[in-house]
Image (tube, rainbow, N blue to C red; front, side, top):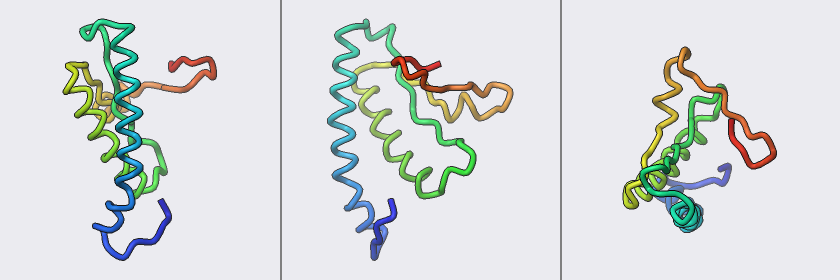
Length: 105
């Protein structure tokens, strides 16, 4: 994230291998999930970007990853939950954390 780039285009070019790797790995995860669950019972979430003090460049980069999540889920007919929308209203905000035992709550 902190590598210098002379132009925005060059910054995106530097980011592309990271995005390509994420896409390949995400496809593997989705394909594995589809072997365990019927597509109608499966949902994936976009990455939540409303974290307080999240740097602007990180928030911007999350959009690139969320685009991949949306596209790959859509290509497979998997339901998509956009935590950016769900958690936008403080009254609806969810506490999501990793338990260390392979579960999100």
